[in-house]
Amino acid sequence: MADPLRVDSPDVPDAVPGLFSNAVVCDGIVYISGQHAGTPDGVVGETMYDQTREALRRVVALAEAAGSARDRIVKVTIFVTDMSRKDEVGRARKEAFAGALPAATLVEVSGFVSPDLLVEIEAVAHI
Image (cartoon, rainbow, N blue to C red):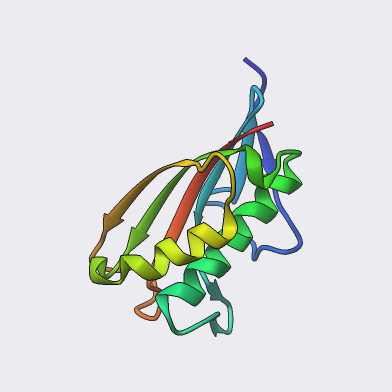
């Protein structure tokens, strides 16, 4: 097994220093930590649709920074605060992915680190 390699992207805010990496590559697999629409100055987007688009943008940026690509993302796990708004998530996913869609899991959670965050997405990609 190769040593894990941390991956960052200038298009994605830094992960919490000392706690985790935004993404790690090991043996040709990219493991992407949960991405959301938060910034040091607030949140990108007010709707679940807008926040899902931003989270997916960050997931793709990290996959690409690791040497993978959008169409090499094989699994996403999506956490939402309101399952009744899952259609907004689905709409953003359909815009982000074409062809063979990634395997996916959708889970409702009680909340995130900021109450303004509505969605968080983690992913696995292949190089």
